[in-house]
Length: 84
Image 1 (cartoon, helix red, strand yellow):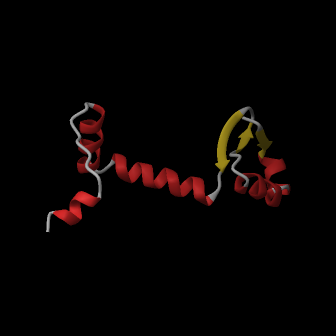
Image 2 (cartoon, rainbow, N blue to C red; image 1 turned 45 degrees about the vertical axis):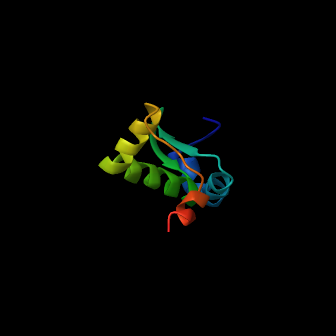
């Protein structure tokens, strides 16, 4: 990982870590050569949470699996208005 800090460095440079994370670069924090934490942007965390919510939704997963299997049919949105 490009942006890696020790715990001591992270404590003293927190504003810099936050700027790097906001720029889209995850920051790795290590203690004794082991990763103990990451600093990521709110936008990235929101995307991770959204992905986890989709993966936990059986209906959404069924739709994704049907699409991957080629069982999904798509229609132009205009057809929805013409069915009235």
